[in-house]
Length: 311
Length: 182
Image 1 (cartoon, rainbow over the protein chains, first blue to last red):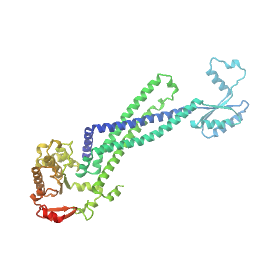
Image 2 (image 1 turned 90 degrees about the vertical axis):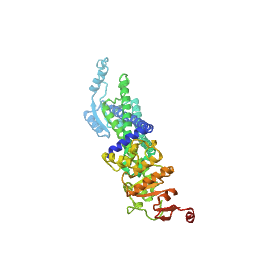
Image 3 (image 1 turned 180 degrees about the vertical axis):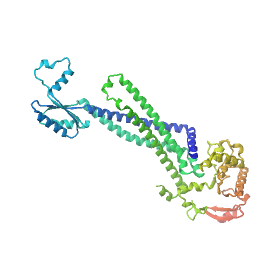
């Protein structure tokens, strides 16, 4: 514990002495995590929007007028037995007329027509938005089907764009994770190099490897956490101001709202950024210092045996 | 680096030490360097205390041992000075203080007077002799014939990686002897 306090003070002192290096370190981690966080928000937003929009998309299977109740029941059973079919509900001719009338209050259809021209229908929801087209295609082939309708081309396009966005975000996030890891490693390597004399002195007066590693590990964790906190604050601020701006315009209604999962999104974002920053900081420091110490040992002892032992 | 034979320290072949054993071996061997290797951002007190922190000494031990060693070495007035504010001789004294504060069994001095003027070199060698008189085994590597001849301790002469002389009464090779061994 005494040593731990001493090492923590050593770390604080090192912060004070190499200000420029540590400023660069902090900036690099913050920028990496900020870009990663922005892509994460886009990914979650895209995924939520895609799911919500997909959920709202219904397949309407309009039925021929001459079907008996038995045929309708059999047809419903066929639809329920299809793969990727979620919810199925029957809408009779009367219900269809009532819905139509409620939507066009100025037009009294009953007054104009003797018979109800609207067909009965099944309203189907697919389990996943990407199966809508396939389910609609199967329904089209049923004998009692008059016609099928689902979504609009615009919505479909929007869904495709969201899907591409999600894939691009996933790929970018994976690449950014690698980039963050390697950039943190590089900056720690610089920090280790800047303090190589101190490390050599530590070794010569009998410091264990863990004693040498800890100040660098503190450094990695500190900057990982600090970078994550700053990146989170910036993204949080951006999202809040975007939300306020959207609420003032008609766009708000058209955009898939993130409101429902807001707390989840912010928690996930904080966990991702802090977790990634701290874990990468810890392991990056450990790996870099280990490499340096192993190289030093090799130089000092020129022993192939030790190299093998270190793997 | 030796290509054959053994290096036995404390009855142990140091080439066979495991990685994790090396720090504990080093704690029993104090080292002094030609270029001092002091931490410039730390005061004289902190440079010496550093070696104690590494061994897990308590603050009470550090606060008692460090001033005692610095006083013995003649730097009691320089506790709060930084290495850059000290002369070469003082820096070497500080290096010696750091090396002996853990009371090592062996003191290894690699060209301890290489960067010092003749008078300061003699002061440092006197100090090293005092450490030896206290019971610490001292091994000095030097090219300075005048130092070797003046102190007349056991001298091992190594030339081109080979031991060419071992003298109990000391004395550097004179020109004729050097020619014979060349």
